[in-house]
Image (tube, rainbow, N blue to C red; front, side, top):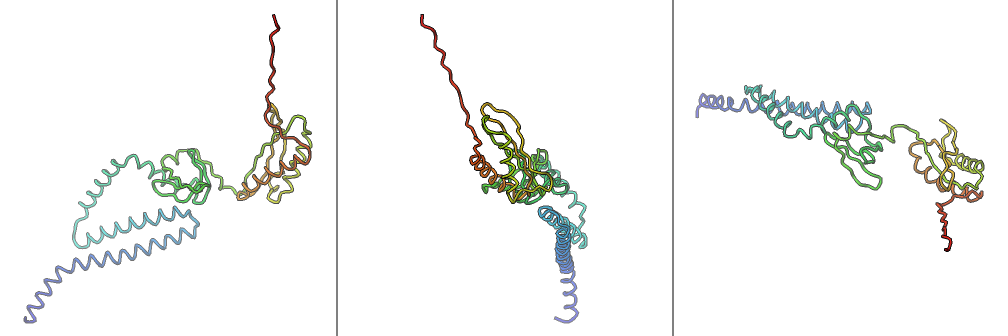
Length: 273
């Protein structure tokens, strides 16, 4: 084969390979740029202390959008019209949206929860009859971990429209405890004993308000004594169980009775004929 024929063959092969190499180059470089941008945005979001679930959502969304733009740019660069492709993708998106219309409310709810959060990953919440620690928020569901280690998947569409109680948002909480004491017991002494027990506990926080102990009601067989104590959020349940046990012991030591329900039965006999 002479040199001229070789050049002619090389030109023919180059004409075929040039679009392929151009396409591969754009895809490879574009992929590297997309990965770098996604990591850079992720680091900025982490420094801004955004919710981990929101960071994952931004990372995935950015990756999808960037790679889609790269693919369309690569096809356009080698002379393939992307107008028809965009039209087909739009039609497919509309068809998918119609087919998944019941799930779109969950997607919209997930976006709302991520962009306008009512709770964050790690918070303990109660919503729709379920309660637990938030493990993850994705586009369709929010995953909760219950105290007994059960995972509950709650649809975002139902969650975003439900009444949500967030127990973790504030650094402190108020603990309310109600005790029943007998009518024969000294009420003022019971209040003093309860307050003394509460104030002596190291987890009691009096920075917001002093501990509270007052009569809140009268039952069929007992007087209701309500106590209110402020504490740090993480100390809530420890203080709850400690005071429930310690105040009972203190009442027993001071002769303050805690009655049980009683029922008096009277039998009326008919006079003999």
